[in-house]
Length: 425
Image (cartoon, rainbow, N blue to C red; front, side, top):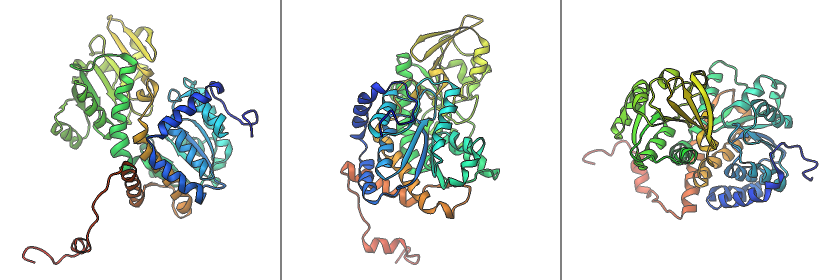
């Protein structure tokens, strides 16, 4: 097949070689995927399987697509966010892997929905989602395709929240693996990946010095923990806002100031929310912010900042830098928004480093394989990634890093499985 015969919608096919070089660079720090690719080539676990993916179209995602194709899958890919596509990567997948890709950085909402519909034209057996929009479309406008679907995977906190709500209402028609909740995903990707890439996006978008700034982090889940940790590492004074008393207490014990957003809004210089909920930064917060406050979001959807309220408050909106908009308010204050309030690490930067996505995407691949084998025995619920998959990925990562660990002796193993050996024995 040639690109002329392939259906796709991307920005520029001429960017393909640049994208392939970037894929190769990312692959250097993705040894777990390389190990899986070796097995997949031999075993062909996805032979004859149609897989529809709605994901951030990055160099790391492209390497996941590469190993799925090596394992025999027929894959179609679209963007899971209008600003998260890297156009050269989309071109590389079309030109060098003959893969239908529907993704353009900066695409309209109409294009976004059309691209998702195009991906579903393959009548998928497996879905891979970042945010659950693909699953939602399958259950609404394309419910005719549901009989083909064995199951799916979901990689984001936001998507898992939506899926659990859907399952609780009895509306989820096939099993979905919560890849986001795997330990080798959220302990590492959410904390270290989101932490570094979010700060990267804010700095690329603004070029502000974070040292000495009051940096307000919305939430203290795994993503927010990473952002708070990295902001402090850059010399910022970090303030955390929370609704959960346990997480708030943890933030205090980790040495951060904790206060309601209404109070933090008065003193913050830079704001970043990563909760999965809407209007974490709301209109009444913006009303008390200082002139020059910078707003950003690292949650999956562009709802964490109330952009509708901000637009209504502004008398003028000016694009002052790539991916940075200045909102002038009636009283003359200026509020700045990075990446249109969308996922800042991908809207204004390149997303997570490949070394951490290596584990996350290994989870995606192995969870898809698990669903394929066991999906017919599972119901329409959200399932945790099995512990043995987590351990396999951790072991592969350690092997690739050249790190060895201890093994229990028979005596130690017996002790851990014996109840009678207490004090004095």
